[in-house]
Length: 329
Ligand code: SAH
Ligand code: SF4
Image (tube, rainbow, N blue to C red; front, side, top):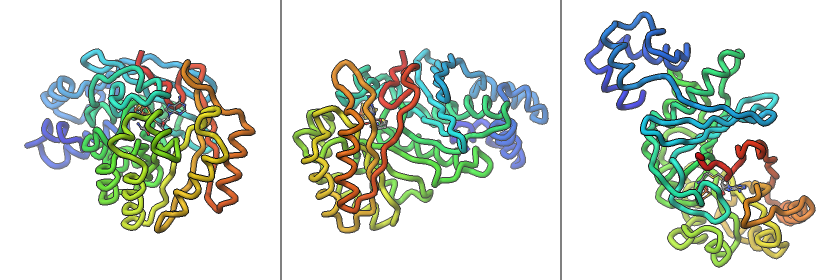
């Protein structure tokens, strides 16, 4: 349970924890009044400290829905639900904006407001959990690929993951939860020691530091060699496969030569337990997306080198709900 929520219930008999969790995550109530078995004062206290109404605007584009959620201080964040035939996947934000300013990313270009609390991260899942429950469905999968950098808000992200995974919470399998990072080395190390087996994805986007620095200012602090060292340690400790994310920007990072460099980087690892995910770029006014044949060419080089490589489809562009398009406008 979220720490602040625990504090509100402190001193209550033990079964209250169960009742509160049941109301919140199973019944998915949108007002504490609906949790009729709780005592009146507790309901009042909860309604004051953890109001359950969520102010949001919902937009749809095919199987993608985007919620623009207004937080208590008026700050807006965005959450995306992708409905595949066999599962519902939720893309969560961890910060309002992002301080890292990657040049290709709308979130990064929009500036940074603040970190989200663990409650505000959970709130996003509650919002879509309630909508899905009405259809007899649930959240099956969670990716931390919305606004912000998870490892710059790591304690709150870890707290939220515990609630997402908990059997008294959302009961989402750890293997169905993924964190995407620009490669904050301390975060990668902490995740290796985190008790839940969640997946790690690293946004690489370039095979050399010069190019990566052009795209991502954070590469100055965490250059490629440092990231790969941390990944080797992570793989050594966890024996879990890491996903390397690589957005495909036309005639910039999508040259065959670069695919070969990327393959060499990976094959030089002690244990190259990785797969590469080529992400079609969602265009901004700065960069253009690689055409499909360039993506295929790049992919073939990796496959021929024996590296597992997939191409992620991109959804929700019409509502600016795709990767790197969330801006909290
Ligand atoms: N801050 C984290 C997680 C959020 S971004 C990170 O950067 O990894 C999630 C993914 O979307 C990252 O791989 C990011 O590089 C990618 N992305 C950003 N802008 C994009 C764009 N315009 N098109 C496609 N992917 C983009
Ligand atoms: Fe932040 Fe990730 Fe966007 Fe970079 S890509 S600005 S780290 S959200």
